Length: 296
Ligand SMILES: NC(=O)c1ccc[n+]([C@@H]2O[C@H](COP(=O)([O-])OP(=O)(O)OC[C@H]3O[C@@H](n4cnc5c(N)ncnc54)[C@H](OP(=O)(O)O)[C@@H]3O)[C@@H](O)[C@H]2O)c1
Image (cartoon, rainbow, N blue to C red; front, side, top):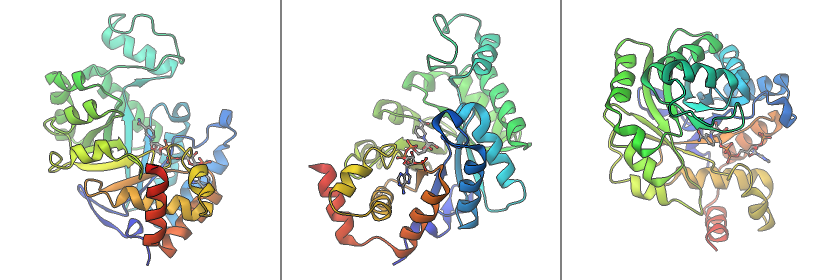
């Protein structure tokens, strides 16, 4: 049976398929991905019915956002999650310094150390840069990129994000976090309505702990293939590659706390084979065998 990941459903204020396209590697030519290939991968995913897209100001140093902006220009039924605050590019670092001076950014080495900046003024100016790169005058979902639990204690930051939403600059806001401690602080932040957390069939701890707390927050699972690293383990267990991807994605989505799942795809062939496998559906036997394999 066709996976429900391909059928539009309510996600916050949007009606979209819950399989989201991760664009971290789109156009990253230093990782041997061309812009043309990235554009083709994203357009193919959109043509095949996906509409939830995840990007960030630092992905491929802004190239990902530009590709996303061009691809969605004349499309409806799309929502873009855009992340700011992770300082990986010289432009981001210079801009952050204007807002916080050297304090808190001491020792930062341009483009090599991924520090973060969530000063309220910086977050708004970074969001404006995202709009410019994407060619849009409003962002759908603005996410803080890997904030720590302590960042959610900054009342001024939360007020800034809620004010940006009230002013129509962003439709919603949230965060993308890595650890359980940060996720538990984020989910309780007043106004936050989207949260990205790592989840995979072998490790659902963060999602398990968020389940009783999440209420009106749309929870998005990421790194469901462990950035590709889980695939060889699963294929070695006997499943072919598209079936293995489909089982890993489906398994993460079936977690009761998870509302949507991101799948990073920068190769058009991966889009085609992954979506075809989800069209065919995932058998219970495949799901069980993958779960057993990852838990062992
Ligand atoms: N903290 C954060 O904010 C954060 C952290 C991580 C991820 N993310 C977001 O979540 C998205 C997904 O996470 P992720 O990139 O860590 O990992 P992922 O979705 O677990 O894995 C993506 C990797 O799997 C590969 N892949 C996909 N389908 C495949 C197939 N059929 N055969 C072989 N390989 C396949 C992709 O290759 P190709 O690229 O070559 O197609 C990519 O390298 C990212 O793109 C990003 O948007 C956010």
